Image (cartoon, rainbow, N blue to C red; front, side):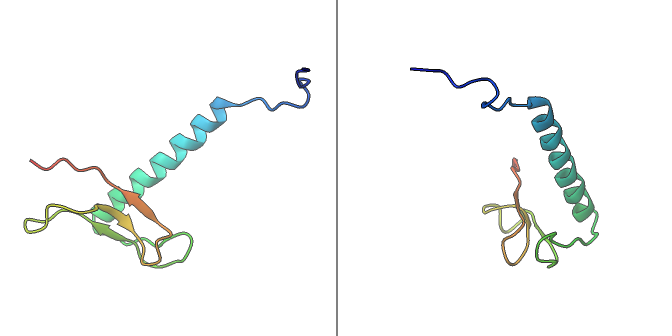
Length: 82
């Protein structure tokens, strides 16, 4: 069995992956903050308004997060209810 030569294998750049992940996380966090403040935002894909779904006094179960009607944007929030 022969090993692939080093020129044929790809080197993973975890630094670039980490930067991309951190940027995406911060963008989502800022989007959620804007929606909690009452500002509006549109889905980047379908341009529909995004909806923030949070627990209410009557409905304390379900999926909470940021969604668009078409499902392009689907950010689930983990919320601890006391």
